[in-house]
Amino acid sequence: MIREQTLRARQKLVSKLPVSGELLRGSLLERTVRHSKDCPKCARGEGHHVFVLTVTYPGGRTRQFSVRRERVDEVRRSLANYQKLKEAIEAICELNHDLLRPDAAAKRRSKKT
Ligand SMILES: [Zn+2]
Image (tube, rainbow, N blue to C red; front, side, top):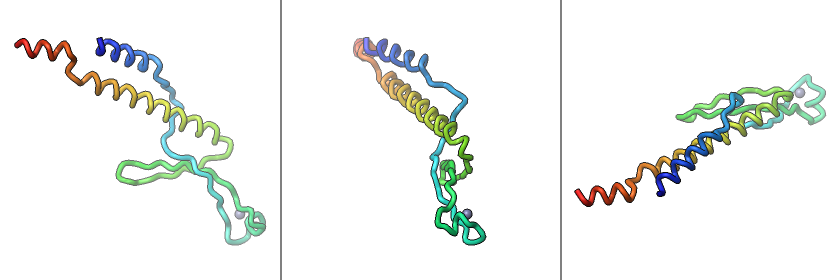
C-alpha cells in the first residue's frame, strides 16, 4: 500500500533528522576592507580580508555579523547543518503532500456510498 510506504519513508527521515544546535542561516562572505589613510597595509594595496555573515529576513531586511577568522570553520559548519536540516524538513513536507491525497482505498469506499 502506497500510504504505508510513504509513512515508512517519512519515519525513516524523521529518525535521521540532522538535529544540532550548531545552526546558522545566511551567507558567509569574504570582503576586503581598505582604509583610506594611515594604514601601511592598505597603502601597499593589500587591504584586510574580513568575513561577514549576511542574514536576510522576510521583507528583505538584512543583518550582517562580522566573523572572526578563527570562527569561520564553525560558521561554515553551522550553515551546512542548517541546509541539511532544511532539506530534510522539505523532504518530509513533500511526503506529507502525498499523504494529503485521498488514497485508492478511500476512493473505493466513497464510490460505494
Ligand atoms: Zn588597512
